[in-house]
Length: 256
Image 1 (spheres, rainbow, N blue to C red):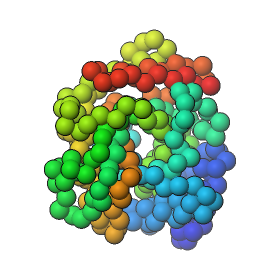
Image 2: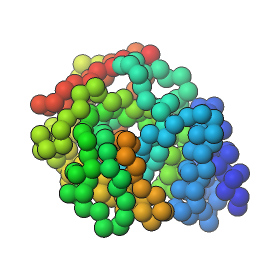
Image 3: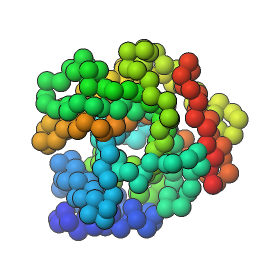
Image 4: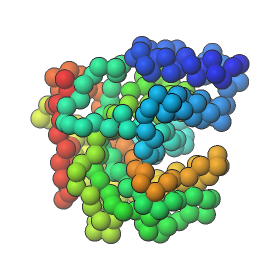
């Protein structure tokens, strides 16, 4: 088993937007540690091509999300500047079977590292919080994967959109925030902040601890997407999405 060969295969499918078979079934000895190495290798390729590393995303941070894809723990992925949407139009170019989900984005202004980080540490390092939309897109056939597959595929990262408003961390009880997602005028998903590990700040705490095990950390200036507040919904050309973060703001966009 050659991790460089596997990482090249995944990278090529990410770039070509062509489905691939799961690596976990073809390489039964592959480990979670191998999968994160593959993720890191492919991110280095992006940086060598001129992209910019801007932060981290947490995935599978709710029990419901874990059940829906058959896993039992959260994961993390890396965010690039090229993934950020500059407007409220989602182009499907380069995507296979995109799904969207509402999230909170923490803007970090102090280094967060170590295995003993606390929620208070995270709050003290958080400059502000933004409402956000993440577009995920697994490169595996039928959107079917296990923990190893999805980690190697950079946690299904594709695109993300950040609201312009930055909220002070202590101005809102984020675990009580209610979210309503509408597709083509119909409510299809409801959620609240506590659906993300009980409180979105805990997602950042968990991320710091997971990164520590690999000698990594959250650097100042980075953003952290804390995980889907609701189930992700599959979108198609012509769809319109409206996400209301109750008492905060709304994000609406169209799918081209």
